[in-house]
Figure 1 (spheres, rainbow, N blue to C red):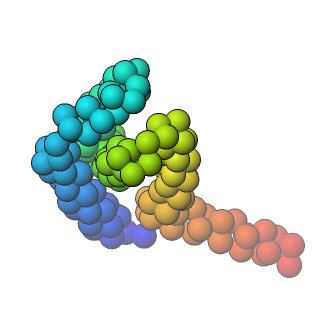
Figure 2 (cartoon, rainbow, N blue to C red):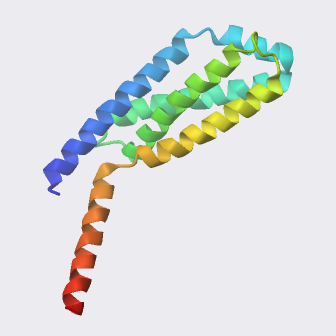
Length: 155
């Protein structure tokens, strides 16, 4: 794979990460977090504080992902930071969904377990599906060349 192709793949991936991080940041700004956190606070004070800490971490991750994907050549570790910001955008949507349905399903412990399980499952899927394709292609080529060299040495 030529360096130009690697750069094109990375640039395309960073554009997608930038778009998703921007969308997550916009949703974070537009959603009425005070009303959602007030619902959680009425059920459990500690859970509301933990939600506030998580939402702050998620917003910081999305903003850093937005910066890293905007300036990938100068940002250190741009790809993993943008990857994490994008993951946090999706997990924040999951958190907002679970905080929103407190009125319908007021069992906070079960909602918390549901949030954690769906977040873990999504994170596992995200880790396998959102791998950097340049590294996967290089690994496949290395494996292929390794197998070819073994076949030549045997034959």
